[in-house]
Length: 218
Image (cartoon, rainbow, N blue to C red; front, side, top):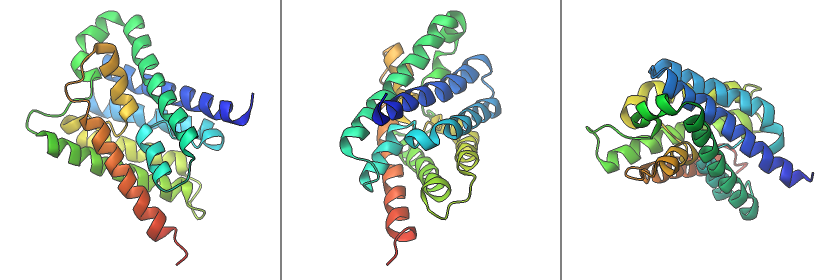
């Protein structure tokens, strides 16, 4: 198996695994702390396993941000994004098969949705801010040559914190693949656009700022 195929396989397994872990917590627990912890720890573990192979993006918004700052080639980026979305669909579909009753009862929680107290623009802004925090954590702990050796822990921890503080507001998705999978399986696209615009905007801005200011030698 060549290097690119290994990278794509790593992206599929990593994205599938951490989303499966997080979504099953949503279905079986519903408790915000448990959900945040499950997504955060699941992501941290997958980054530890696959970080050296694919960069462990596991998130189309992260891949697009890396493309914006030219840290990934466009052909590979497209393959990563399609793989991540497919992994999100697979994780959701498997949970629907394995836990049909529980899945049906928790549809509202599995889908990424924002609070009725928020409007479309506000929800996008919150997702963008959370995603900004995510990408600067990725750059500061994994991308930077001076990064401390805590990348998986740090990234998992920011996901945990973001979900804990904003999960009740926007589901704190920060990841189009996490939101796309349930929307695709359930055929419900009502609020899905928020979870593309917000994360891509936040990660792209954050990556550009970190790359041009904090990693610049000028």
